[in-house]
Image (cartoon, rainbow, N blue to C red; front, side, top):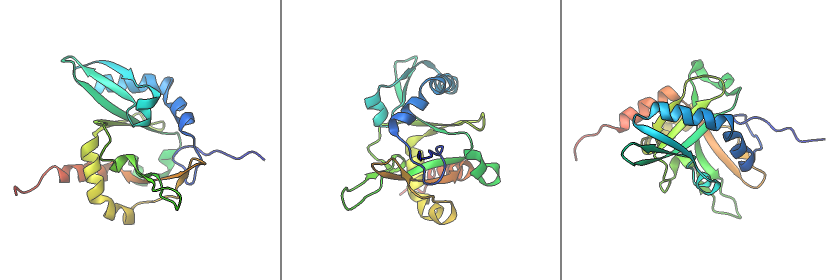
Length: 191
């Protein structure tokens, strides 16, 4: 009997990086490049990265008129993910672990928490809806660190995703919570 593969966004799924890479190319790539160019004022060119850059979490470079290059990570949720959303608000899959630690390896921190990540912006798109979000990676990272203790008790933490060689884990947070958290971390009292 052949193993059934579930779509991304389902609990306990098995997925393959190169299969997801292929999914992100083609029509997804065309939509992403058009969306990025529309959203970033002054953008004159979008370049899809090579596989090595993709492995570091950079899917596109957006070039501005002044020559500045912006590194962008693209995250797309498959069709059907919206059936899990609470109150109809899109949820972003924020990764806690890219590789969950085991007795054989020390693991790898999830992209959302990765302080070494060179990405500047993250483009979140969905197969189910036509709305997308372009969010500062560093603001998202800081907000996630601050609010994770609250969110892990409040929101669904599914079983790890299984690549066959390692397991990763995400938590699904409504976009409204993320925007509130980002707004909160952008203000502070002067030390």
